[in-house]
Image (cartoon, rainbow, N blue to C red; front, side, top):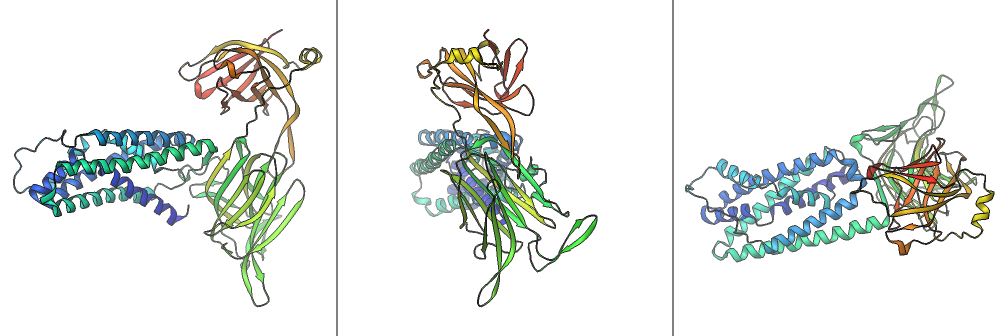
Length: 561
């Protein structure tokens, strides 16, 4: 996001959160209304200001606490949104059932004229004494995605101010309305307000559940946090990925996806600081500084299983019969096939060192590249059935490139195969010389039962894949890593046993650069894929140890003689 987008993002969400925190007619709301009715609008407003200060403190504490588990939130953003929406549903039901006057004790011994400080202090302590408001705040923060990694912390100063202003707007509205309707206001009105607010919160919660469930079904999302410097990129800075190239060789930064991606969308903002063909930029060649008369180029690329598509961008000029206008020259390369397409565009894209938004989308075998300053018109379309393995950015000699606001969505293909034909299996195994191939069973286990339960005493057969798996280094050709192994289910399932058939794939081992160590894709008893940081290692005595780090569990298989 750009400056104004980030600021607008935090401001309007802050206002909404501030209003929704203050709106439920709890005890402090009734106290504010009571003081407005009996002592005037100013007294009620001062009480509301005290409540707003208390809400702001709880919001800051909530935001500060969430920052400690930022990586967990990034990884589970959709689940958190679902949980936050569930909290809001519970709170909406509470508003419908709660008697707004049941918790109120009539203030004793109040004087006709109370100072503003005492009213503010009273409203503050009246609200601060109820820490359960934290659950509502956490629910609202999660529902509105108020704390997201792409936005720098200083934007949240405006966001928290907006929360306070939203709360003040609500109390201004309440005291103004009560003052105007003084003769017609009663407890029934408070019931009505509670129910209206309950409906509004319920609507937000339902939308959050639908959105979160949709995102979970769609795939995964990766964000990079400016505060942490866009790790794990090499040229990361707090502002983004900055590649300053003062040499005559190409500089690039690359990120390998943790899983292959069938569906893939990469969005980012890029600013070519040295993007102007009318200026001279220097770079070093053979120990000497050289003036470059034409502007440097930069680019981005995605690596696929069998292809690498690279896009180079540089400022240019578009010559027409009437005039010469600033333009952007875009070249798209398929490094595997050698295909190249050159496009010159001037509309929708900032031609010099402006901040443009770019997108690469792969869906149903079609790859589409779009870009623009504010809109995203399509620039290039290609086709590939290969899964995406990673992406990166590069800067040419004399260039200074800044990439920020990176957002990646991707869908993991189902690499598991069902019902592998096992015809002639015994004959095949009798002739196999691969030590991994053969029958395996559960040897022992060390499981954290609350996190991972074994679905049976499985008997599996290990088969080597027909084709070697390969990965592609950025801007280079294929680099072989050896064959994958499939562990195929034979029998032994006790959980969900009706859905497990002889020939279903239970485990896939994918080679790593380290001998005897494999990346693991595991299908649990419900046939759900588990593969995040799972590793397997060959041990002594024909054993295979599989680590489940996030479930604090370990499982060992043993080859049957």
